[in-house]
Length: 64
View: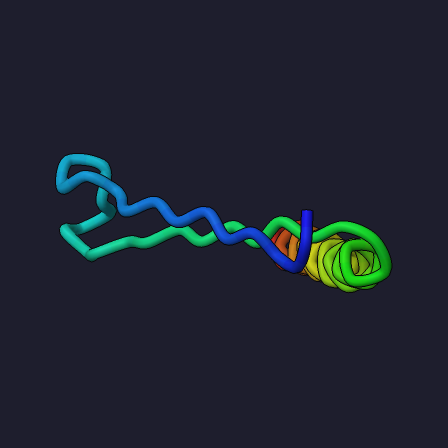
């Protein structure tokens, strides 16, 4: 596969949250670019999960 392949999907009206127009785009890459994107996504997920844990801990501390 040369370069990135982009897959786009528009949600149907009955699938949209609150009637918002939603379009999903997926970029498929391989090789060096794919590995770099994987690393960025892994870091972003790690940061998000860290934030979620911190929020849960704050919520639990606030309830005590």
